[in-house]
Image 1 (spheres, rainbow, N blue to C red):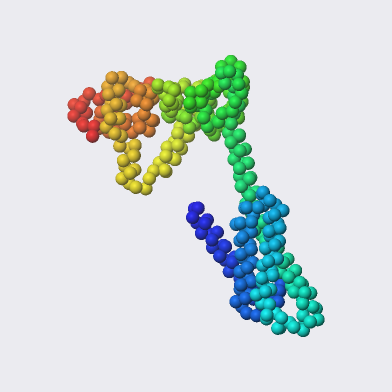
Image 2: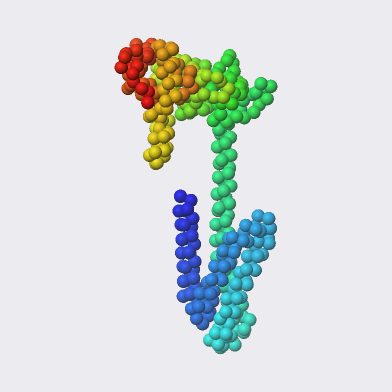
Length: 362
């Protein structure tokens, strides 16, 4: 996309130069005819040099630091190019307009045309100035918007010494209410305090990024690893040996599990859409065929802990929800494990059938 924009800018500049040169090759409204098309073309080329020198040299070097010197340089450049333009066709102008020059006077004749040429050049040099100013204004507004967005994504909290500071909302791991204050935990293990209610925080954060899983607890969707309908397993963080799990308050909000499932499914779809085009690379990275060591770890844990659930497997192995599901699906296809019991209280068991024992993992 960046290369396409560059090509478009180059083409626009070439078209602008061609139109300007064509215009000055066939137009003598601002000055007398110079005697040939080549000289007319050269006069247009002088104006182009002034325009691009203003845009790429004078403005960046002088305007912000020496405004008066910048405008003085522009005026001098317009005068010099106008004088050179008249000098190019001086001999022809004198020959073809001898009578008019004798009537008006040499200085009066050329000064009139010089004023027209100077005014034209000065007007044209306003365009580079305006383009530069617009670009500077656009960059300034973009920086200000970035600052506003950055501060909008911050929240003020108190640390252990009761010092106020700001942390990014993206760094929040979970928030839990204790009495009249709310404890805010970050992904790096830091704990802060904010004197507000959980209801106020969920209104502040919005329901698109955070979810209230109980009356005293809110967590960001992006930090949730899996959900089995009763508990939520958080993604592993360095300061915990095992992934944290929280109970869902399904009585207060029966739709809470469905909301979490929806966001987890959306995250999985985003991950699938970002897979590489190279088929061999994707097959090597694809979670559809789990490695042997992961299958062995899941199978051995099921053997030692009959009736375990997927959340327990995630906590023990530290694998993601997708990896556990792939492993369980593969083991069930091979007949090595089976799920027995109800949806809420059931679990996975190792199959002790003879055909299952003879089935190799890979």
